[in-house]
Image 1 (cartoon, rainbow, N blue to C red):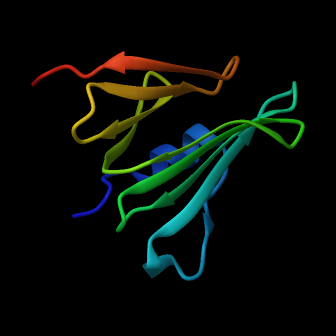
Image 2: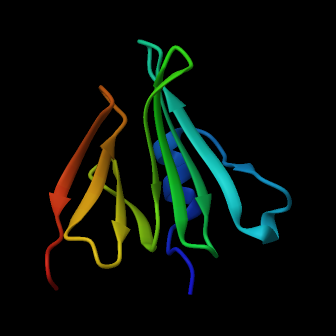
Length: 110
């Protein structure tokens, strides 16, 4: 399997097209967003390896970095990016506007 996501939703949220690493068929790409305060959120996505590297930096200095494994989906909900991993009880939710905010949200059972 691979990470489920809608490219147009991520493009709208990050307000830019992804940067493809190698060729598009390889399934590796980067999205990033910077706010007016110099805070930047970057996600490096490998859809076939089901991994996401999440970086939050301020003026190019990394403040937070995490390699997320077994990522099942990236989805946009209420203008936020929700990262869901299998076997984890909380999803990571990242709000980009009006201020960058990252929080953990309990996974609801469907």
